[in-house]
Image (tube, helix red, strand yellow):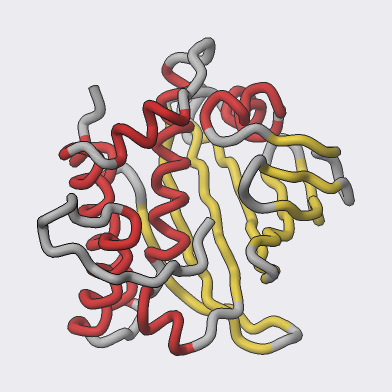
Length: 225
């Protein structure tokens, strides 16, 4: 049983910008503390067998300069690696390239802060439509899966069960609350509140469309994880 409010509330969400060689990029940051030792969280996020238990099956070379591919999702190259403190990688999805930076910090012998920054050049029109939740909600679901895995390492996430949960009342509430919090983070970064709320609502409608017969929306797909 997932405590939706507690799980959403466990994540810190932040929106910012960064100047890259190709120009200004958006930075979406999600951070959560897990009740697990640093080495265990690092291993869960860098070992193919364990990644497949909470995120997606992955293949490739998970070492510096190696290529990876997540089943049905992104691929990329590992561009930096500092075990057990962090790694960077390109995130190549839908013909576009963005970047992820993942950091692990011990906050005690059995507590570790996981922080992920997703950095992307996003055109203003797409950002106005969906805001940070386009990638943020996808990572929220991943962070939830990581927490479940760390509490039960031998269990494997069943994609069919995840899909069924995502359209349940709890799943829809999780997505709605996470989208709304990304909207607040967007407002904190300077976006007008009404624009941020509109983008959050459209993100919710994409990830958790209303059931048939309940105000269906024609919502285009955002660039997501």
